[in-house]
Length: 80
Image (cartoon, rainbow, N blue to C red; front, side):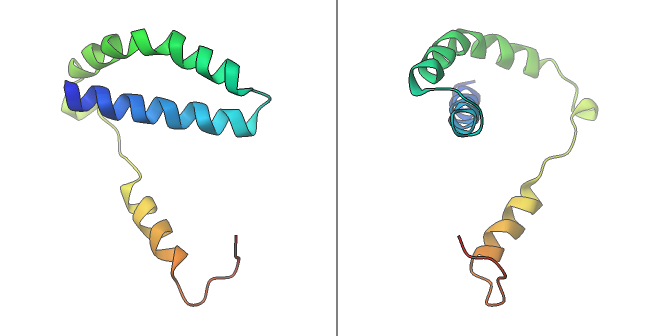
């Protein structure tokens, strides 16, 4: 449960950080949103523990690995 809470907090913070850049959401509003959502994390973990393995969908780990490999690819088309 502690590892799940750490992972979930990291995910939530990342999503709010992305929203801060993508929508008109200021830093203060982002912090307020994190403060409102943080107490819900243990409830989310509790519900997640009740999900059967057959009901869990797929993830995008392969895409993340491929994207990381693209960063150092010699034939990269775009530079950031």
